[in-house]
Figure 1 (tube, rainbow, N blue to C red):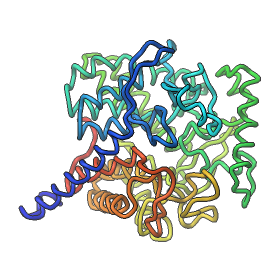
Figure 2 (figure 1 turned 180 degrees about the vertical axis):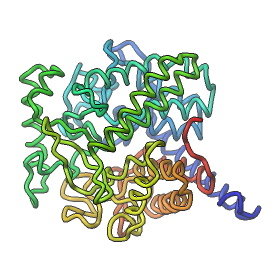
Figure 3 (figure 1 turned 90 degrees about the vertical axis):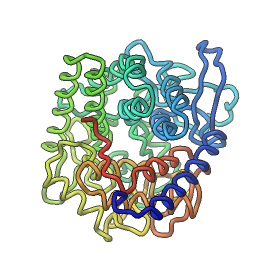
Figure 4 (figure 1 turned 120 degrees about the vertical axis):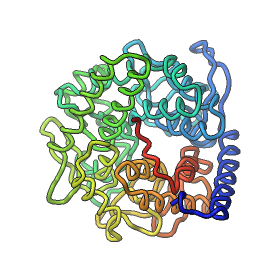
Length: 441
């Protein structure tokens, strides 16, 4: 633990963090997109995920980038979030992709499966980590004045999710396409999408996506009618763990600005989400949480890292948290040489390396997962395991650079290079050896 390190050890740790900060800053400078968009009459300033592959602004990527930027330049961290919410729609919706410079990169759009609300804003969501990012940036910078500038927009987004994505009122929001979870090709959706074991090809996934997208287009992408189709409705455990956690952060942000009534309302929603995850998604026999699919709410019983993500909830019962953590410590499941794999090693669908062209989330390690879990572990008193994940994450970057994802057995990097959210390793390293809970008190 940091408190027990001698002066020499502290100096070595700080040297490592300084080196990481320099490397991350160089990547964020190279990936920075600054300009003016005539289509909306607004300036923009954000870090794109990868210049050559993903030059646009993605929702949860930008939230991660803002958390990293607070270590480097808090003004840019604020600009990242301001740019993200700049094109929020009148109903509170924020799209998962904003195509600020669509015309400049038109050649890439053929490779994207995106439903559009406008030609420049997608009509899909991503995991709602926005409130936590605002909290992080506010704590590092101007505090309450920054919160006051953005909190109404942030609340409007979470109110949209509550109103539009939880029609059955069970406290769990639904994703209506696989990419809305951010986990496009995860094997937990295979059976629901009609993809048979062994049919792991991009063409199969694209065809499955198209079947759902065409059905939605036929009803004008009307929310109620899309739910009624029951084509792809998943109450995803990871998405709802992030949602419940962020409702807590939003409640703290509202309280900070004097809105005690709004704070109580969003705390109550968070309570509801936690209760529903426990009563509807938790398999006590296996000690795992599973997604619910379709109107029948059938459990998708595939063991992926998302089964562990309720660790993000600060009010998770201690015995349940202990069961989840045991999976992280099991070498037959998630305790691989370079954790945390996106699919349990025990699953037949586990693939540690890349599959074909652009298939993702079927086994490799992603550092945003490690970032979530290190924060979760600290709030549940497992700083030792959080430190281990942080150290292995640093080693992955040292071995293979800032890659999109990594082989959990060999540490080899794959996917996009200079992938910006992998810069979260800086935030993990900065917290290593501390008892930081990353939870508002």
